[in-house]
Amino acid sequence: MYLNSDYCYMVHKEHHQDLLREAEQRRLLHLATHDASLQVRIVRRIAAAVKALLHVRRQRSLAVREVTR
Image (cartoon, rainbow, N blue to C red; front, top):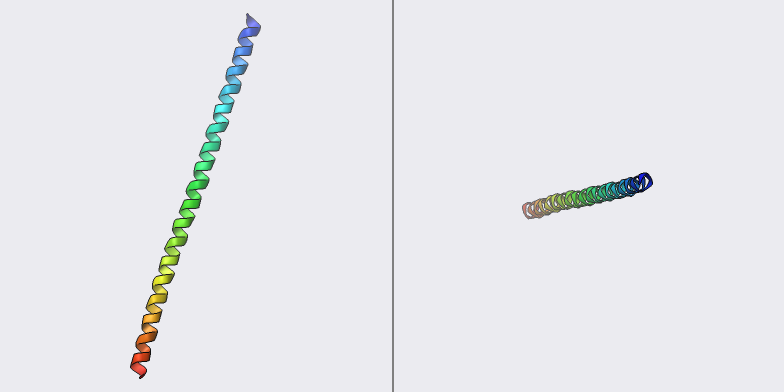
């Protein structure tokens, strides 16, 4: 009976360790996904800001051309 109880404990412990490993893998995957999506949002914001600045620069350049005519 004692050996059976030890075996059950080992199986339970191994199962618990598997669950902990899976939870950690899910956590790391979630963090990696979150970081990647955060980076994408940052890059999109930068691109939008650059686009706006280029638009302003182009408008000013056109205005200067009109004044110099």
